[in-house]
Length: 539
Ligand SMILES: Nc1ncnc2c1ncn2[C@@H]1O[C@H](COP(=O)(O)OP(=O)(O)O)[C@@H](O)[C@H]1O
Ligand SMILES: O=c1ccn([C@@H]2O[C@H](COP(=O)(O)O)[C@@H](O)[C@H]2O)c(=O)[nH]1
Image 1 (tube, rainbow, N blue to C red):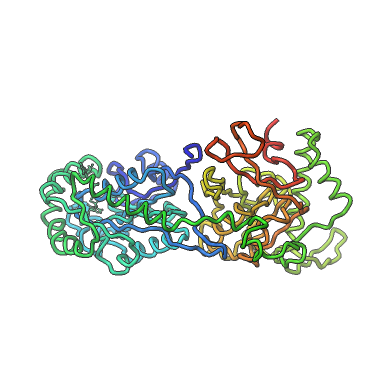
Image 2: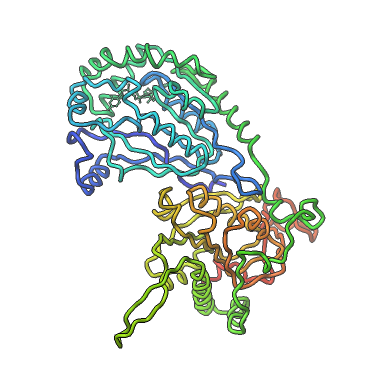
């Protein structure tokens, strides 16, 4: 599993040396330079892939698991959050969301007070609770969000262009001094934690941290502490401990952290679903009887290219195991171009009149201006990209890495790299997406990819799945039942879909053996086109 680990961002403000008063007035290149020189970056955690978070109907089954951690400044909230992540071990993606990112923007007068240690950062009004709650709700509901970035040394929120895009957490840890204050926030948590720490220890830690990491002087820290931090702790922070499910000590807290991790693991296990058997039920199973019938061609939104001799000729070359790699690449690219051209027919067009070189008007059509992008399901979806860029030269193409869990056979989302226009919810609503997948067998990867696009706000009717080949007895009917508005464009349907064991240690009998013998399950479309990625990329 470790070879599949990908990296996901975790929000936490970081140290920058004192700079100018406000970054929001600085030109973008300067901000970029400051970022580089001061290490203002997201922290990353390993993710072991996200299993399906949706059911057979395509709708999300469960929200992300959200933990709220409150406590005084320097009580150890971040430390507890990180220890929880560490003790969870091999778990799906976790995001630590710090309330510190949600300090409000400050004007010049407020900045002057802040630099004189006379601005009250410990009053609830200093934080944009509404924005914090809406970002957290987006993540909990499996939607993407954009988190502001705050600089402690500048006492300022960075320009919007610096906001961080986040998507796809299974566990979210929200931490901050006021994390349990707001009822809207409290309602979003599945587990509420308060870190209780001795005031002297908190002050000592804060002096050390703020001097070392936040560019402060000892006098400044003490001034601010006595004027604002301590009174706010007594009035606003400590009283919220009554909402906590667990009180964790601010030091020597290993036992409490262990209890919390055990609880989270149990919750995640309860939410886990096995999904894949439903996509391709065996003929003897009950779900096969209730499966949609397999006459794919009759289904609305299933677009099979006209079976001309020319098209069949290309498939014959691609199916032939003796075809050279050079020819394979040539014909894959040609076929990809045909398929993309076919998909283009389903984009909205509008009338356009032009004047020809002989000064005569011609009435034609043009694609209605819209954001059109491609998303490849890696690795083999990339084979359609050259065809896509031949038809639309300046198209932006993103990617999703989905692979099967070798133990369960379930798809795992390992990496998400989407084009800018669909990272943003408002723009995603109007965007059209060509989703590229080389072959659709069980359809488990395509299913997951479509769910990712829907989570981002892309309309199902604006998604066109383009694929070289589909399996008749595979998961396409289930995909269509869940997402009837998604169009599927393909050039061929093959009758066979066979489960095979890969990387298997040979054993004495002739039948395939269990995964404990080293192999893992995979599905092969037959007669098929072979491992297209290998044939295209590997010599
Ligand atoms: N259990 C602990 N044992 C030792 N040091 C700790 C512990 N918890 C926190 N610290 C230290 O105290 C400082 C503040 O902790 P941090 O987690 O950043 O606090 P908060 O997020 O509550 O402001 C850090 O330097 C951290 O390393
Ligand atoms: O610009 C700012 C913003 C906040 N603070 C202080 O930070 C702490 C909260 O952060 P923790 O990581 O929980 O300690 C809060 O007590 C504010 O006083 C600041 O000094 N400057």
